[in-house]
Length: 444
Image (cartoon, rainbow, N blue to C red; front, side, top):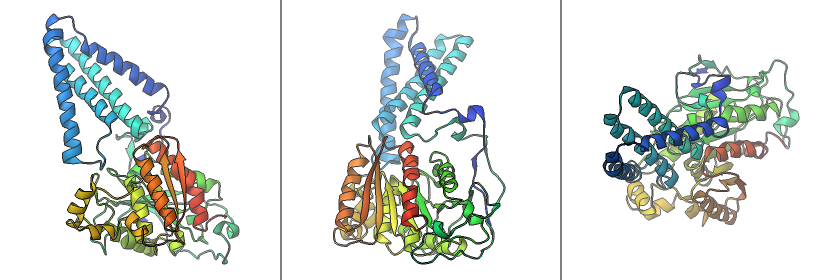
């Protein structure tokens, strides 16, 4: 069997590896951006200062406000609204464009070219400030562009004899790395159809560890990993540096690592399905039936709830908790990174009205905190993780942690330096991968 290989960033040396988050390049962008903005603001004409510049400043503030209203009240890609700092940097971009347009009539051709360059530098500077907040693009090579290549199809191969693991033993205790095993895992994509749910998902991303290539295949556990919203499975490959994290883990355990299936619980970049079965979509059925069914049919892995971990960030973190609570027979453990205290479309009333037709009981029947208030989960383990500077989602995670403890779960709370960003989430996955592997019976 083969799957269409996922588009990934080509291995670039030099400029492609330059960091956009720290070091000399962000500093240079800051210096050039501020200098360019100052140049665009200053003109010799008296009319510029008393007439045109005040108009530009008022228009920039107005357009920035309208963009914020459009994003928060109409488009609504973020359940909790556009972060204030991001709104400020969007305003800086608008200001730069308006300054460029208003300066044009006063400039000759050489000046117009310089003004265009200055405008682009300000936009690049402000755009990277937003990027530094979310850490979506850590290096130049992770930016969208022609340097991203589509490799040929990746053959996963037929089923092999399974390594027998005696009761009470971990896979690592009986595993002996065979000669010729690849040093790194393999990445591919696959379509996981919504057979039972009717849900239309984007392609999932599959990471198979080196041990999956063994002729006597070990029973490897599975991590079902989810992105945030807005987002896509590919976010975990670029911003989340999934391959690096998993290859490093496999290198330290003789090629052993969980199989990772990065699924799409959204169906589109900004779709908010709430990870529930509702009027919006049957996302829970997709993740609790279609995805595990596809894995069992197409991948040769360990079976049973103890071998399945749900994990994700933000929306995906909330979703991992939902699956642990609403599908405990499928997922025995979960990793909730920067999740919310309840699924939301922006407010509780909007969520209940839009997704459940105003039926509070229907929402409570699947809302994790409501379910945990009257049901115990002594056989479920989990990690609640948040950034130390995440003042919105951190307190919500603390609330979920308290409720999970009261429901009898074996849970821990972890703080990672950072805010609500990819620095926290990629660090969190790397930090908790040994916990997942122990919980799933891969290592001791």
